[in-house]
Image (cartoon, rainbow, N blue to C red; front, side):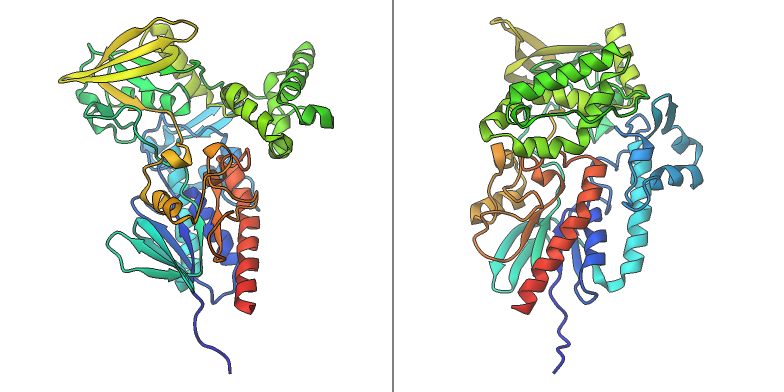
Length: 461
């Protein structure tokens, strides 16, 4: 007898870019009777936090030619920009530079929204969008029962955790904390009083752009441990792949020394350091995986901040805007450690220890923006992750950065055999490159094959 029972869906938790890529490839890899349930609690499907901003000064950190969401059409986004009718305001978000074309993240969000509509229309009832924040996952014999806010429980055969960068505990708690992604109140800030940004990376640059776009004309103070700023892109081709011996690959110190030598050789030949860094991109995951744990720890402790500002570069117009702010005194970048934040009725007083000193400074500010980036797994306030940890369904991965999993995403240490996968930034620490659009896009296909293979095994058992 042929069963007419429809298999339980595979659930994707997170409807941002990671979730969209996972859904698209799962629909291709799974049998036609297997549904895909895509769960997103707050934002339009496909956009996530990063691509929902309407600010035309919030530029993508990669060239348009590198931002295709289609693994089979590398120029898909660039072609979309060229062929899509855009209004005058949207055109402001396209910046042509010598280093390439950079687009506003809101434009990329429109591109992803159109892609979502196309995927959803082609999938029919195989793709089930669920507008709900999943807060708990209960193991059951069939797989899992999902519990979400305001929706009935749902049975699923397995999970793909594609939640992007996790929110962490606020470094600047209290009533004076400002949200860079909700800048509606920035225009009411007093231009005679400072605003503090914690962090000096890419999110800091977005925060400054948001403050200025909303009319704040006062001084901004940005603080991080080292005070490093992201480097701008340039029109530089990738260099030759370096010859790294096994001895070099097993030592953080030797690896850094070898990269520095490659940069020195490039500069002696009037080449750019960016070509050396970009030549490492295809092998960075292998280099990371090949390092002993103690050497990985040294990389994280001593090298990662410097690597990040050279590897994860910014659009030249964004870098130029920050440089202009620093020259004018509108932005002050400080290197130091924040020791305390004391709230007052009309602001906050921040105690800072400048880098390389034992002294202390106090800075009075009217508001604080947290631009520190991602959270470690155990630090997040996300209720689903907290419950998954409590149930023993997931555990922190290497150095607590993400979820313990295989490089392909299969979650390790689950308390039963129902399949769980981590995807995208959830794999931080397991792999080195898992946060940029090309990394996530290219990893979605092997993830989908692994899910299909596992579900096939379970169905045949």
